[in-house]
Length: 66
Image 1 (tube, helix red, strand yellow):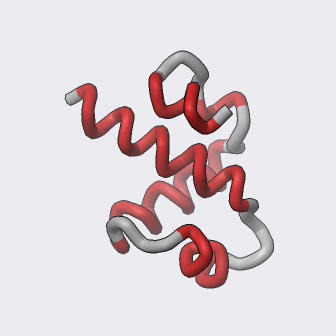
Image 2 (cartoon, rainbow, N blue to C red):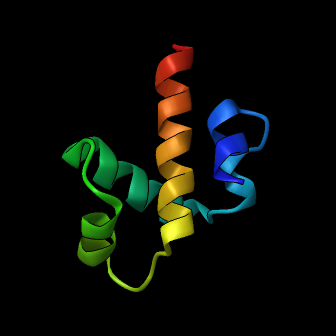
């Protein structure tokens, strides 16, 4: 699913709730291309690896579209 989020074919909001989307997006924008494992460790159990992957793909898609 993360692949399709990264192409814009699926909206990230279908998979990640708004509060988590904002939290994860802000984290990645602040910390850049940090490893998913480190991101998961720092963000805690409240987020899943799947959510991290989808938000990262979403941010990459937004960046490439503008």
